[in-house]
Length: 335
Image 1 (cartoon, rainbow, N blue to C red):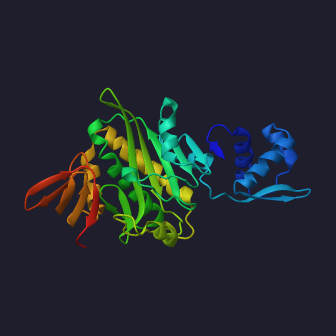
Image 2: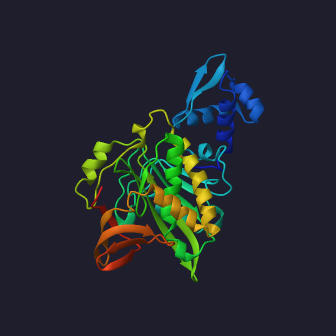
């Protein structure tokens, strides 16, 4: 099942009318007259709306009444009242896909999809950093965002770090809890991973053609099940779920807040204002100031994490001097 934010006008018209008149029953004839569609079309749209998780009561001689919204991250729900100019204004929903990142990489070739978000209820082949699998059951938020940035190639390594800061802001505003940021792009709560990022970049003639940000958030997942699947994998350090912070918060609230925070950060990057991002990320970092061991493609680096540079590289000091690490897996050796 695939939906987008711009190709279901009949269904969205019926749904929107039900949502804006949810204190009363609306007859099929009233809906037909107001929306200029047949009563059969009204009935078909209401059946589909119910299949998508909305609760619509139906009473003979009274009509239809919407009593609760769907918790699915449907595209028209994402774009509704979203306060962004670009990011998230086009949205695509898959009930299941191999990977939102794979879908986004294909769709990124269309210039109309600048800012588009691709979201899935579940993934069969979710992608993590360095080719790892990301366990993506129902209950999580699995999405990819297509961008055509103006910033220089050198900033691409800072982008996932900046994006993790945007998600940190969003979680703080929605859940009133500030997650810590573990270099390069993980978010943790009480030392356990609650979200992660990865970036795929397409380059042409030494400029960025497009960039795809993949985001995985453990919103309402079975922590024990995921830990059973991952406990024997390298560098595993536990799983957290946001649902433990607040049972009533809806996933759509977090997604919309994140898209808004991400656009602010994205604009700062396009304006080459990296200092503010680095400063704010450092304040929330669980890595800076710690003794760390980093597994890189060139071997292990051990020392004290001092800072991140303008390109997002982690500077680690040891008795042999400073090392700049662009990519790697960090193990915190000190609390």
